[in-house]
Length: 188
Image (cartoon, rainbow, N blue to C red; front, side):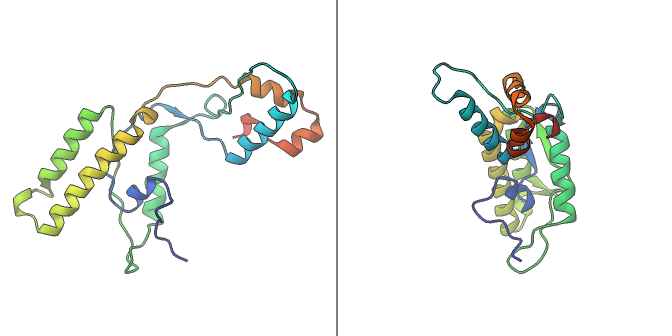
């Protein structure tokens, strides 16, 4: 089985390939993780309920009220997983993940970290490093900044979602339909 990440996978690949050492993220923000099949089932149930009706009602799927997970916990789980189950490079050697993923509250702090990474590694000045090491350090700094810019607003967002309409819809379903659609948010 090929355990190397492909281009179609998420930016966790940067971390799993040892290229990401820092990220903009508030570790105390809760995260909503809802399986896509539950979201699809909820959409089907909403469509069935509102077929042929006009008007607007908002339905949201969220897990953070019933079963919160904090972003810092999730990144800790990523670290544990990729440390225990590393990806392998093209030569079949395991790719080590960084000892820890540093989380920064803003882009300025992340940029400062990236600059320090570029200037100093393992106590060596940037000029004393081998060319390959310098290239790797520059790449790591660019990856950290890129991922930070892409995900900054999401990973620092303190939004909570009102899922009361979706819960009410689920409670209105017959037992038979509940078993078919199965999107109860309290079990996520």
